[in-house]
Length: 169
Image 1 (cartoon, rainbow, N blue to C red):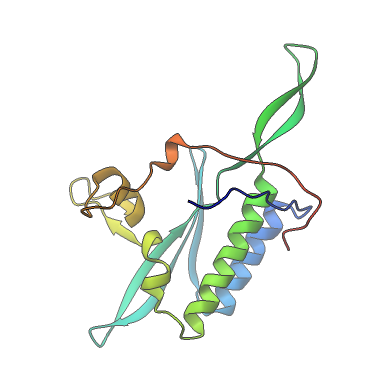
Image 2 (spheres, rainbow, N blue to C red):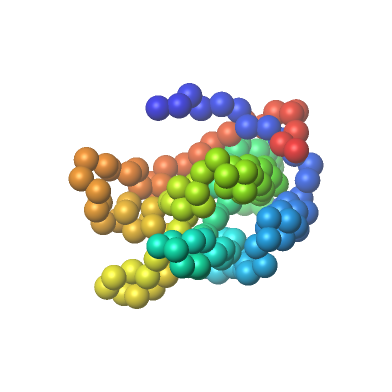
C-alpha cells in the first residue's frame, strides 16, 4: 500500500488540460479520439493500431480523470455562512490525467513497452453478456475473473487531498 501524499495545486483550468491532451494524442499520431461527458462520468476514449499476430489490429482505450476531492470552505445558503465541504478538485484531476497520458504514451512510443502492457486496464472490451463497451479493469472489478486477484471497488473509496502551493505542470 502506498502512502497517501498531498497532491499539487494548479491554476490551469480543466478546459486547457483537455485541449493539451488532444494535442498530446495528435503528437503521438492518434487521430481517433472522443471526449464523453454523460451522467456525471467523463472519459477520453481513443484508438490506436498495433501489430497483433502480424496483422494491424485496432485497440481502444478509455481514460477517466481521477476522482480527487479536497476540503474547501464554500457558502451554504441553508446555513447562511461558510462551511467546510468535500468538493471535487477538477483542475488538479485533469492536470494529473494529462501528465499520466503523456508519460504513458512516451513509454510506448519509445519502445520501452507495448501499448497493451501500458494501457491494459484501460482497454475497452465488449461485455460478454450485455455487449456494452466497458473498460477491462471495470469488468474485472465486478466479475473477479483472475484467481487470487481481488481489485478494490473504486466506487466505494474517496480520494481526499489537501491543497498545496506546488503546481502540477
